[in-house]
Every structure is written in structure tokens, then in C-alpha cells.
Image (cartoon, rainbow, N blue to C red; front, side, top):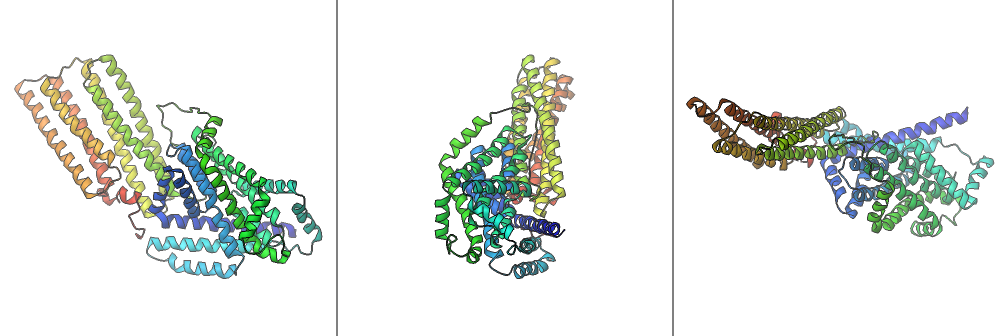
Length: 581
């Protein structure tokens, strides 16, 4: 019964430790806000920047598993290529060592109770601040406090085995059996990390057991190596049922960690000697009572050295490594090109909304590209008199319009779900604005499809436009196309000059629409035009005018003039200070 209570205490302490990590992660993400998102944009840069990005993000969210899951998501959404993904994964492995250093340097070298209570004391007044930024900082300190309390409970719940010779003999046997005992400990470290789903938490347990004298340096190092393999399972499970690219990214994570572990195992003795030479003290010659004092620092240093070694070894071969993965996992199409499927994977423990916004932003830009492609297709269609070619083009535009409907439905549902758990006013403002923009873009695709049907009707009914009428439509079409290209290329530009130019273009469209309407009325009143032809011209002009209205709505939303919505440029680049109510 006593052993069962001890086990429950250890599990509960671990849960408190993980909860502290989650609170800390959320607070760091909120405080970082737009800066965090700009850091993620480096993911698609060169290999070195990708590694740096992976490191920085993992330090912020305190979970390499969460980072790699999000990398798989980005690859799945087509926002990142495999080479960049591998770079981020390498950086994430280095970034996850920071947690070990925090635990080793603070958790065992000073009174954790004082540290945790001090952190919570700082958090308390910040919780009641009127400024959101201060409340975000309170979560950081609260997370640190809970993390250290959990670590203290883990230490306290570890039973004293100094008087149990049989237990000590069993644990010491792992230290003396050479290669097989090391491989067994690697396997145990892998399995424990798979169960806990956090290499940082498993590292904390390993450091605690080492500090308590349960395990020696060889066993602790082997467990540390196993944790690096076990942490790959989270991303692999996230990749199941996703695109080929996402599966490749997950496999890259697994192979990188497994191959790196094998290399380190082959060089284990010299590598441990190098770390021993760097860390003060000597874990191989000091008495056990002295070794346990420096062992947590030694393990943190070994963990960092291990991941830096792997990064240096793999860095020159990232592209060949990516090519190898592509050969192992060949391309398989799950959906047809006409269908739209937005699948985004996320680690729910971290609720890293900033990552979601980057993915959503990329999809909105794709939707903008769709509207431009549709308009270009209609422009080519509108001047054609080949009935077969027009019919085929209308079918193509129908498929594109259906894709626009699918994008609106899936992206809006995704944004609404995100609003339920939005972390900051900035993120909520972004989501409200993006939902409006998605809706306006979908309306544009509807109008363009209507225009294609009007062109089809023109040929089917044998309507012939005179040169003057064609010139009128071409001029208005040119104005609309120019306005469409301008807005879509400035979708994240909230400068006053952008809105001023957008309104100027809308004003010219309105003037031209009025002039063309007057021309149609004049021809009808003078009996100079066929009624069906003039009605067709009015319908074309009406749909083009609607496109102009939708574009103005988008420009106003981008520039936060519509319903006091914060501008997307401000939101995307973090210019809005998180000090609102």
C-alpha cells in the first residue's frame, strides 16, 4: 500500500511539473506575440536560420515535441519545405536542452521552495493588473513557480533507498553490465518518454534520480539518449492520416534522432570524457556522495553536447538527407486537385496560437491568388467566341468557385474554433478581421463565376457586341483587374496610403460604372441598342461593380477602418501592444 501511495505521489508531482510547463509556455507565447510570429517566418529561410528558428521556438514553448508537431503541420499545409523542416527539427533538439539546464542549475543548487514561492509572489500582483501584458507576465512567473513546486514534489516523493541493499544492488547492476545495460537503459528512456509525451519531464525525472543517488552516470546518460528517441513519437502520431510531405517531416525527425543516438553510442566514452573535462568536478573518480552533487549539471551539459554534435554532423547533409527521405516515402495523392482540404495538426498541450495564425495567413493568401486566377481566366473567356472553348472554361471556373466555397467554409470554421481559445486581444482581432476577409474573397469568386455564365449566355444567345460596347466593358474590366491585383498584393499593408489609393480606385470604378450605366440608358432611350445586349452589359457591369465593393471592404478591414478592427499589418507584425482590456 505504501508503494502504491508513493507511485501516486510521483505521478501527481509529474503532473504538476507538466502543468507548470504548460502555463509557462502559454505566458511566453502571449508575451512574445507578434515577435514570435516574425521569428517563425525564418523557418523558410536558409538552413542555418531554420535551425536558429527551431531553437528559439522550442525555448519559448518549452517543448520540442510541440515544435516538431507544428513543423509537421506547416509541411502538411504546404507552408514549409522538407529541407527547412529538418533544419527546424535540429534546432528544436538543441532548444529542448534549455529546460534541463533550468532544472539542473536551479532545481538542485538552491532551496526550490523559496524559488517557487518567490516566483508566485511576483505573479500575484501582476494577475490583477489592468494591462494584458502584465497579466501575460504573471503567467510566466506562475508557470515557473508551479514547475519548481512540481520538481520539489518529485524529489520529495522519491523514496529513500539508502537502507535497501537489494534495490541498490539492482540499480547498480545497470551501471556494470556494459553495452547491454546501456542499450536497455536507452530503451527504458525511450518508452518512458513515449508514455509521458515530454522529454523535458523525463529529463527532470532522470536528473532527480541521479541527484538522489538512484542511478549512476552511465545509466543516466543512456536514459538521456533514449529520451531523444522517445520524443519523436508525438510528431509521428500527428502525421498519421496527413499528406505525404507531413509524413516525410515526421520520418525526418525520427531518423535524425535515431541516427544521432547511434553515432553518439559509438563514440560514447570519448564524448563523456569531453563533457567531464568541461564540467567542474570529475564524475568518474569522485566519491558517490560528491558525484550526485554535480551529476545534474553533467547530464544537462551532456544533453546539450549530444544535440550540438548531431547538429554539426548533419548540417552539411541536410539536403541529401531530405532527398533520402523523399525516396523512402514516395508521393501519394490522397485528394484530387479540385478539392480543398485544410488539415492542421497541433499539440493541444501548448495551445500555440501564433503557429495557427501563420498557417491561416498562408491559406488566406492562397485564396487571394485563387481570386486573381479566376479573374484572369474570365478575362480570357470574355473575349472568346468559340462556344466549345467557353464551355470548357466555364466548367473550370465552376470548379475554382467550388474550391473558393470550400476554402471559406473550412478556414472560417478553423478561425471560429481558434476564437474560442484566443490567448490575446491581438489574436482575437486578427481572427475577426480574417473571417471578414475570407467572406469577401468568397463573394468575389461568386461574382467572377457569374460573369463567366454571362459570357456563356452571350454566345448561346448569339449576342454580338459592337466595338463601342466592347471598349466600354474592356475599360471597366481593366479598372477592376487593377483594383483586384492592388488589394491582393497589399493584403497585409495597413498604411494610410494603401487605403487612400484603394478608395481612389473604388471612386474611379464608381464613376465609370455610372457613366456606362448612363450610356446604356441613352442607347435604349434612343433605340440604338438591342434590349438583350444592353441588359447583358448592365449585368456584367453590376458584377464588376460588386467586386469593387468587396475589394473596398477588404481594404478597410486590412486598414482597421471597418468596425474599428485592428489592421492586419499591425496584428501580423505585432505592432499592437497587448495592453488593452
